[in-house]
Image 1 (cartoon, rainbow, N blue to C red):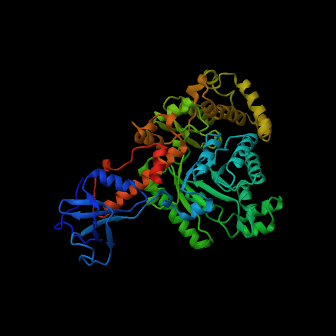
Image 2: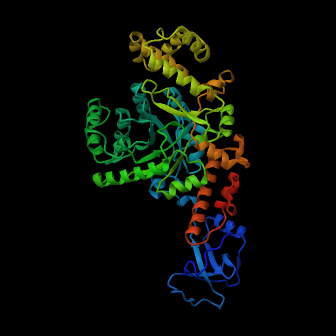
Image 3: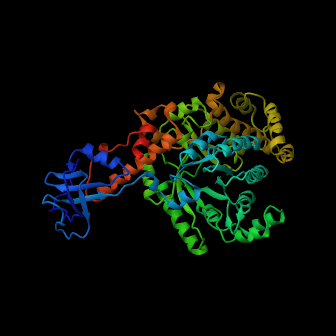
Length: 552
């Protein structure tokens, strides 16, 4: 423990005075750690001849002392060097975010595609007063319906969210998904990977206007100013007119929509797993907060959109930093994929639990393959990033499968497809005949498009092989992952959370929130001149029961 600088170095003006009234004080580091870790109680630090001491009980009078002793009982009153009010995790973030979404904590698990953000995660989070987003991206309407059949009755009256992802190659499926969510009365969607507003997301938002207000809420995940601007603004008149003409919304709803932003909240997505621009949170979040403020001054929305943070949020210090920078809420992703409730497999959970921060890389995205969009994936233990990159290189270089040199074609069929190109094309054609038949006429006349669909077959199935734990395809596992996973593993090393079998989404969330409060209180002590070594504070992961006991 280090003591504040002496009077000669830093003039000391007490915050008030403390009288013991028979209570005790302690100079021991463990006592400071215990006091800071008791989040529902204030912390009082007094100055003594031996340095700072933390007190328990007694009488404190703060302010208005003028440096003189107040009229406290006895003559043994001591000057107060630092004071911390209680800081339970329920106070972190924006209270309006918690209120509007019916949450206890300003904490959300983001959607992980192909059902990795599972119904189990959504239910566990909702039951704990947090928000879980179901990973509907990449799933059929039948699979999404099955998940809603489970989630909606099990979370009746509790918060939940469903992902609606931008699908530039499958706009009909995107619109059909929005239609399903409207029919099922889903009250909140997490809009992700949008490059521009589409009729599907605008329809979902605007069709929910009732009584002059939007009842369908949108949390938009963004990483670019130009996209954030669209979600922080009213929907475009052009799209509103199209939706009115198609009888998707009424003229009255279109008129109401012009006075509201597209999103209630935007999640600033920094360096994350999956779709990401790899941007640093420390610069991206302030940029988006300033953008929100400028657009709020322009549009004067009745309820200003809130701004949360995702990407790299995986340790108590990371969560504390997000809230300290002004995030209304935090969103975790990669760390949840390694939890027992995720829709992934045990082999993938093991791979994730062993990952370091440098064990990730960028690879072509299945849903936006032709556009050259990339996603961040795990590279340790899998050949997927290199194999996917090879497919994109061939797609860019050649106009058709037949134009690829024979040796290259043989290698792709042997390592990637494990079948002939024609055999995989037949499977691909059958798939799109069910999911999006509009793709087939173009593929029949455009050999480059046909090649792209076959290559997307590999990219699409690679994540399903991972989720299913297909042993014969482990080298082809596509595992979406950001550097946050490595940071979490480093923090969890040597604790009960080191093994993936012990990781639950609520247990991880409560540890991160509790630890964030400890970090913020520790920093508040430092700002008041009381500096203690970091290892004196309870930041090691604990069981969920222990966390809940500490939180009361």
